[in-house]
Length: 508
Ligand SMILES: [Fe+2]
Image (cartoon, rainbow, N blue to C red; front, side, top):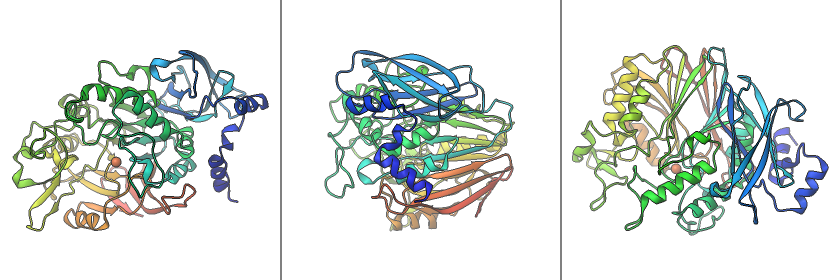
């Protein structure tokens, strides 16, 4: 059996979680309720720190539990780099967010947790390179993992790539009730609207061994999109009629923080949570992760009787689309981004939720139609973002996204309405981990009406894997052969490169 398949078989059988644990701990685990059933995660790597995450599981947990964490240079944990104790509290779902400080930059580490006589499986993580250091970066982007739609071989593929960093770009959970028929696997519970419901949904998603393997392989930066709260919500607009959507969103934000490797400083307060962040990867790249849900204006021209919600609208019939005051990021975050580009580094990665390039189509009457939930619904804000980046000559602008359940590769014009304007950057929008994709005819129509889209493929689930150095970006578009099989083969369906200093995508 090849090494990767052997490793995968171990993960699926659960035996990989015992690697490195002494005999007495393995015996204790067999006798007791599993306290680390959701695995581990790490995130927000900085040159001197990284967040280490786990959540205790099982019945009869005391209200407070002291959890010991260790960070080591080696898998055998013989050379300890840092350690400590964090208190897991029932008020925060017994989640643990340890933040070792004073670490060496640009180093990889192993970490693990111990509590209640049990030791969890170890994870790998790393610190970001020092601000002025030369560096390379292997990273993955992924999004949209609807549980019922398939198994997550895409995550096994990401873990096998051994990235330095994973960027998760939204729809980590879906709030929907289990779908009738055609489900590959069923989800517990109905439509999720409460703190308890969100916690249960995360716990089921995070029980998946392949997702756990991807979290244990590298630190993540995590963004939400709509389904972490509710489909299509916009700011504080959402929810069923006569329900308190502000309370629902606060519960969803709390559960999101409890289940992701996020620092204490991001713990939600007063119903809000500052999700956007900036991370420098040595002198190679600046990564900016933005939030397109919390601060947006409502979608333009919603259905009659509604204040928000997505739809396909005829552009000429929707005057609101042309209102220059409307924003997808909110004006404060838009300003933060415009001032945040790195002019010293060869690459600027913008991690966000959805396809930025125009992907409008025509209806049977020949009228131009736009989908209002994505950037096509906020054209003035998109023009400001790309126009500012072009005017400031932002080097190596690479926009990364998800949401549309299809792989797209694009050139981004400084004025997206004018194909003759200079190219300000390139875009790689990754397909879904498991959520089903659009009909092939839809992708064909989008490609034929939008020549700046160089590639589109909605047939495959998967991720995108990138290798970045000072000279070039290489992108592999990954495709799962059998979405219903957790051991499916995953292959590259296409490969693209971008040379530093040239905002041009080349095939191959
Ligand atoms: Fe999605």
